[in-house]
Image (cartoon, rainbow, N blue to C red; front, side, top):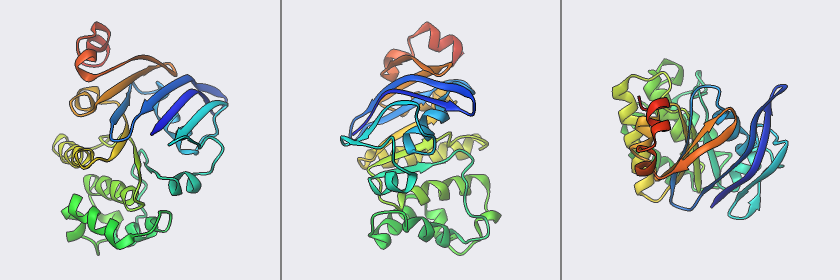
Length: 231
C-alpha cells in the first residue's frame, strides 16, 4: 500500500534523512523506531508532504505523493497524527472532529460513530473544550481527528510522548484495536519496547538512515537492539 524508496530530506539546513526505503503493505502495522534525532519524524513529515523531499519516491497504492500538498495526500487516503497532538484548544471535541472531517472523503456521521466507538471518553466529552482535556484525552482526540477522514493509511508520530504509562497503554490498546479491524498503520515511536510488542514489522533509524529492519521476534534477539533500545 505505502512504498517509500530512497527518500532523502533536510531539516532546515541539515540533511536529516538519507536514502530511506520502507514498505507498509495493506493491513500491516509497521513502525519506524530510534532515538531522539534519528530522523524518524522528518521521515514521517516528508511522507505526508509537510517536508518536500530532496529526492526519492513516496507512493500510496502506486500513486506518487512526494510533490503533493498535505490536503491532497489526505484526500488520497493518508491521515497524520502529529507529535504534540495539535488539537484546536478553543473548540469542543466534536467541533475538532467535524473540522477535520472537511479534509476527508465524506461519510462524516459514519466516521464520527467509529471514533466514538474507539474512544468512548470522547463521546462522553463531545461538548468539552479540547484545551481543558488531559494530555491522554487530547491524544485520543488527535487520533480521532485523523480517523474521521476515513484513511486507508494512518500515520502516527510519537503517540506515547508525555503520557503516563497507564494512558500509554490505553492509547496503544485503541491503536491495536484499529489494526485488528484491518487498518494499515505506520508508527514513529521512541519507546521501542511497546512498539515491538504490537507491530508486525519495524525499521530502526540511526543518523538519518535505516540500520536494521525485521519482524519483532527477530529484532528482539539482535544484540544491537537489546543494547541500544531495550537495555
